[in-house]
Length: 169
Image (cartoon, rainbow, N blue to C red; front, side, top):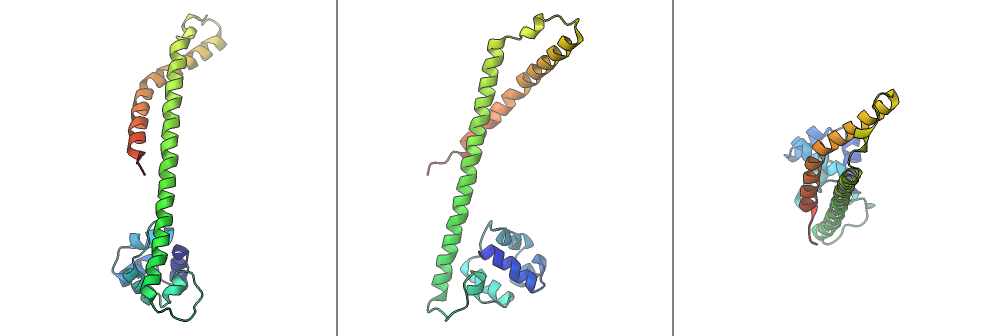
C-alpha cells in the first residue's frame, strides 16, 4: 500500500521524516500520518513526494513500472480515492466498536445497579467477629461504596460517548 511504500522508499533513500518534511514544505507529523496510513497526500503532493524521493508515482502506489499512462493524474486521483474510502471505512468500524463498548458499559452499570438494589446490602447483618466474614463483608461494602460513587460518572460518560459516536449513515 501507499503508506508502506512511502516509509520503505524514504528509509532506503536515507531520509528521516523531518528531512522529507522539509523537502515537501510540510510538518513532520504529516509524513508520520502518511506512513501510518491515517491520511494520504493529495495528487499534487503525491507528485512532489515522487520528486523528493526520486521515485515514480506508480512505484509509490504499489504498481510495477510499466508504460506511462495517458492520464496519470486521473489514475492517481482514482487510487487516492480508493485509499481514502478505505481509511473512512476503518474509521467507521472503530466508531462502531467504540459505540458498542460504551453501550455494553452502560448495560453493565445498569445491571450492577439493579443487582445492588435488589441485594440491599445483606452483609450489614453479618457477624463480623469471625475474621474471614469480616474481610468478605468489608470487601463487599468497599465494592458497593466505590460503585455508588463512580457509577454515575461512568454512566454519564457512557451516555455522552454513545450519543457522540452515534451518526446516521
